Image 1: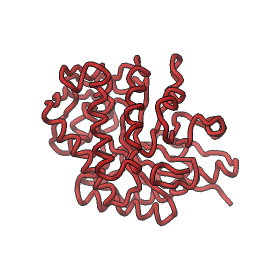
Image 2: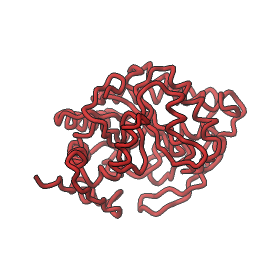
Image 3: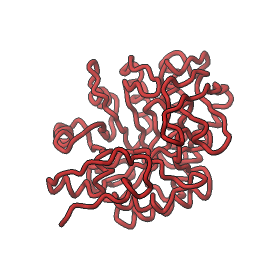
Image 4: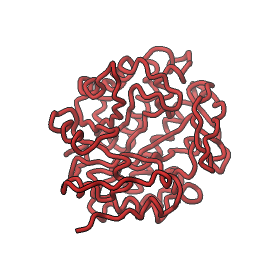
Length: 347
């Protein structure tokens, strides 16, 4: 399959998943190198969410891509994946208002479209969910600076050897906060109407395309997802215009978390407004994924949890083998345990 400039060897992609294993200064570790290397048979690995700037960090031990040490750490990851014949994209995730300050280990502002706190709790350093704090609303004149932070992160990603960049526009993080009326009460050109609410996301996508080429940029959406205080209503009214506008840039793909909405066929809505490649995601099994592909509803599928416990997921699906289940207690803790110690299937 061709995803923009990237030719992938199969249509089984690894979805982005927070794993909380970054080292000091949010630098990727040797353990992360091994984790991604083990899963390089995926058509494309999409990394965990990576903060494009210090203000983008919200969770404990998530990696960044804004310092030279971070770039160097990620270069080891991309070298390992490429050494196994794989392809890898970095997901840029700016948390916006979804921040527990203790997770950072440094002082940085908490910014958002509006001064509206996230109502959901976020796990702190000890894993116990803690309240977020009130963010500061971005001033209109500051928005180009945030856009440039994304573009700089994309250039850093290419310097680190990544094949592509995925913009996280889902799950209630900064891009989604601009899109959603529950978190965006602005009265300038970036709030109010749908046309205004998609303005900042489009500026970021265009900046990424300008920085590294549109054919190396994808984006992820989750219409109707209430996570992190999003209003799940008006999914089509918001995302159909956004997808249609993004379609004009010539991006590599759109990655769709299908929430199984009762009043909207999300994949059908995307297909009507998007002429490029679609990646479908969310609780898929090999049989349901194959049907989506056979019916032409998607061009590729991504798996998350299945890739945690099955580093050789592609080979297992190909062989019709049983899939191992992940140890949910070790998703975010345990270092190598529950991370790099899942065995491949026996020959």
